[in-house]
Image (spheres, rainbow, N blue to C red):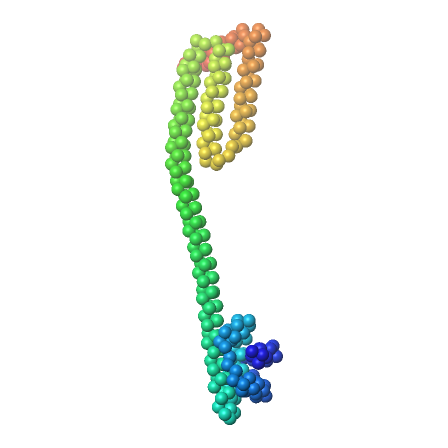
Length: 265
């Protein structure tokens, strides 16, 4: 295979038959004639091993050289023994080139098929995960819908209950002392607004999955203000200002009644 290896040296690579040097063709023919003169027969396994050790990019150059040498042999072989062997060598090399090209094509197709199968498996897994997530979202949607409707119903009931309670308290304002009335209004505001806050906070958490510090700080300030008013009222009442508070309530009630009478007249 030394002659074939010489044909594949970088300085001997050719793209077409027109690029071949005639002197080198004659020299290669003489070398092959000497090889085959001793009854040498090339083996197909040696050709396969030789081509396997070289890149497919140089196969066309080797084919061009052997084509030129076989044509030269057909014209200059005197005894007619060397030309058939060179033609047979060329035929075996071409068959092996075809086999290697097909093997590479099959390997490439298998690699592409494996890659496509992996992509299909990945897409199928992603689709399955998306379907699972969608199913879970649908289940949570039904649960959240029921929960939100229940909470809104509770808000309405709490609000209406607070309104009914406050109406009943304000309806008996004339029979209650001013201290008791103020304490009742403070307790009513604490219960009503905190109940609504808790329900609305739960709705906001279900919708946005996070707490809002803005609302929490607001209800803290509101409860602090109610507690401050309640403590001031209790301290003032305990310090002897109860009579003043009661008289202030009576004066307010009398002024309200007088304005109503004047309006009617």
